[in-house]
Length: 278
Image (cartoon, rainbow, N blue to C red; front, side, top):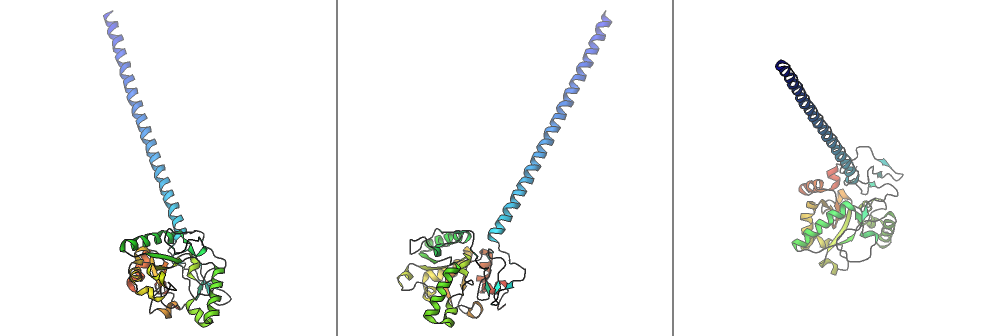
């Protein structure tokens, strides 16, 4: 009888040990599966994040591309080059390079800056990337003690025709070509350029004159515009390259990197892009 009890107890202990081992193995297996599942989730999250970042980068490049299209530009019937990428912030528009027919920037907005008029007219608009930079530039000018005003931003092809024809009638075609762009070759159509002035200059009959460059506000703009991605597009002494007379009021957004290089080297956008008298 005692032997039987001992035998039964021994068998029970073995069963118990086997059961405990099974539970531990099961728990270990479960933990391994959970860890594997977490790893898969982590990898999926990382992959998803990378994909999202890639999509965002592509979107940003499409909206504010600072690349220069390497494809050869085609010419129109008048012998002018037609730019390939009008939405690039480095697009070159001048007397030899024109925008595609009918081009209108897709992201025109009204910048949150001062204008000497209240009407929400066409020339008050610029591209969104220009608007953001303008707001920062004007804020910095305020902090430095200078009150800037926007005068004329976006200019449609139709408006360019009116402006050019008026200049031809008033000054003759030769002079009009020096101070005004042929329709389709105006930077204002890109939405990246804007004419600005200062509070003091508003007292003048024409606030957009060379005198602005000699004012404290004009000098401040010339020295600090590049910090916000802008350049004085038609600088003094570069008329033979830009094709236009000195215009200290006409600023163009090209992004901080390009603007800083252009400012530091004292060059024009044409020289920066290597497209002088192309």
